Amino acid sequence: MDNHNQPGRAYSYLMMAGHICCDMSQAAAPALLPFLVAERGIDYTAAAGLLFANTFLSSLLQPLLGMIADRRRMHWLMGIGILLSALGIASIAIINSYRGIFIAIMVAGIGAAFFHPEGGRMANYVAGDKKGQGLSTFAAGGNIGFVLGPIGVTAAVSAMGIQGVALVQIPTLLMAIVFFALQKKFMYFSTRAQREEKEKTDKNAGRDDWPGFFRLCISVFARGIVQNGLQGFIPLYWVGILLQTPERGALMVTVMSLASAAAAFIGGPLADRFGFRRLIRIAIAAVAPLLVLVLLTRSVWVATVLLIPLMGMLSMAHGPSVALGQKYLPAHIGFSSGITIGMYVSIGGIFAPVLGKIGDNHGLIVTLSVVAGVALIGFISSLFIKKPDAKE
Image (cartoon, rainbow, N blue to C red):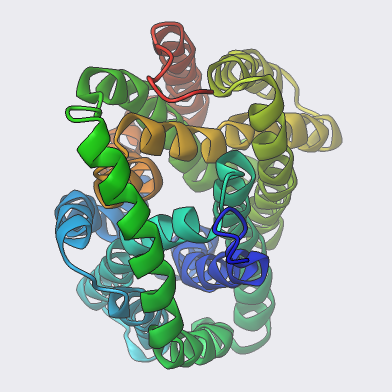
């Protein structure tokens, strides 16, 4: 019997692996900031500008690519996205100018834009009935990428200088080849899933719940701003306020991402069992208080310990939010994925220059206090998320 409910668990992990490699490149940008600030003399606004470069064009492309992917089969976008993300970051090894680095990081962001909408849609197709678990596994791949990326970047740059960043991209280049080689299998999963989608859509005309989806997006975007702000400014906070080395500042990206990856695996099964909305609300409610506690302490060890539940609670809601968005828009899964996966990161990068300007004018403590305020907005908006027509 052809069991569509569990079409391929191995392919769920393959999608996670692709997400790992793609986001390893994205993670290189915040991990490089302390080194670039120390070695190139750029200020906080310029540093935030690099985060902006990685996300601005990406944020414009992802919803568009998601809509196109909902109408046309474009599985090759995943391989192209992984390839561009690797080449963009690797090219920093031979680029010295700020403008050149800005463009290189923008190319990596375009790669992420190519991968995430189609990757999220394919992750849905191979997840079967366990959408929360399947999408959380896929989302966890991004968190793991943000763990491995800073580890590799910190080790390589510490040993070889900025030129060492190219070595970290070798696994990503190999993963791009794997995704290009599996186009026929991706087509098989897509054809089968889209056939069932069409049958459901024909029986349930007007099933897309756009108002519900946009209410969800407010919470998603708030969490994206918070996560990007923490990844960009916590390393600088460790150096500028807690008086740690740039290497230890970059290491905090790894600590945060490791906590995020572990929490992402937990969030999906909990959402499948207890409900998506409840999990999202409980998780985001803890973020602002934990961040305030980080800012109140001057102990490096206490602050590091507090970062673990802080990032864990923030990331626990990510996979369930992706799955919930796809429940709101079952006929536009690609578009939903482009927003809840791609723009989750991109919106934070767009807001990064604002945080950078606040940092230059008022200091890092005020900047991270603003981030805590955004987390509070995310919690309040989560209270207005309604239950989708599909069963939670």
